[in-house]
Length: 103
Image 1 (cartoon, helix red, strand yellow):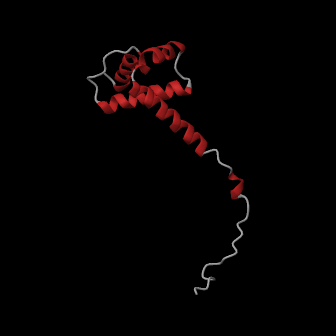
Image 2: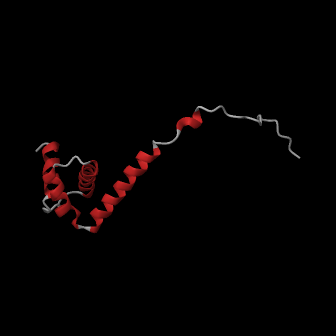
Image 3: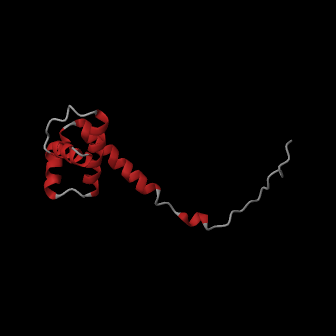
């Protein structure tokens, strides 16, 4: 089975609330994160979105994961939307290196 097929199978299992306990934690976390990101970006189909809300978000851990990724996405989008006009203004360097007198 190719990785893409396995990935799709796990994703479907998560959406349909099927058993995923046999998967290693890292793989499961990665695919859950991708699924949550797809939800946040609005790229799930209407049927997938319905399954996501009804079956995937049934645990507190997954709801917390959703909220963490939502906050990360907001933070990262806000972090790159800063005012760059300050870079256009000349810097007033009134104190030259070595010009201070130590008393």
